[in-house]
Length: 336
Image 1: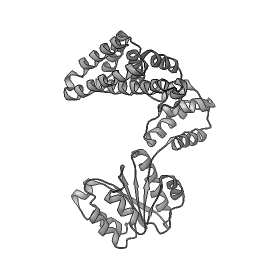
Image 2: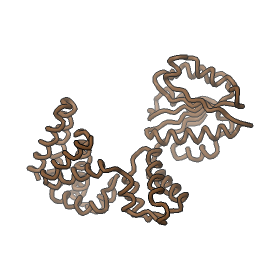
Image 3: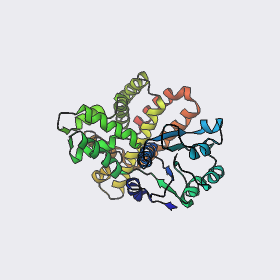
């Protein structure tokens, strides 16, 4: 029927084609895919003259009964006027079989939820070409995240200034559903205060483990092995695996190198930091800039392979993750 562009999905959700009976919702953001599938299910259910039953199917259902989808699409529920069938795409959702099922008329609506699909994906091509169907790509961006923040805080009667909003966006993750949950939690915390502050965001969005990770990577890039090793031990005591600390260190040094390389090529350190996603905490930015200047692009370029090699060795020998991480901290401190 139609291969929608990501920019057109919001319009489709507000007013789907009346003839559309089957929709594929796909993309790398599982939370956004789920949110849009829920919205579509509500829209399809609202078209009915009465109650509509929502049926959820996945690989377990198809393993028990390969014909289950065909049955659900073509049978009326006992206690409702129609069905909306939501399917989580998996290994048992066979595209040729699905094509055969959808080739025959069916009364109930179908929503298939999938992860990121290549343009040559059989499932994606099926919904893009099939009559009475649509394929909706879901790729979140800063506008989506900003819209989530604005909507949830407006509902709570709270304001947020642009700088704090930027900081909040940097603290939120890539999953829109999880991000929405964090914003709702933040709104409850700040209820009655009238506005959201940096301190509110710092207190609620992200946990103590995240703060400890941040302290660890800054101690390591600051050439303070004693503090870095203490934070590493603190993380281990809290149940954070050394692998998580190494991954955080890799991200931190990658950002340092990106900013330092911008300066080396004649750009502005300050502007390069502003372009980072996520951007460092405003209280950390002066330290971040100082570490960029202290290391320089060349030494950071040599530090990154050391970190990646430690990560590789840790994956091969998980029992030695801790010692490998400690050795890396000492090695980095000798390079600065």
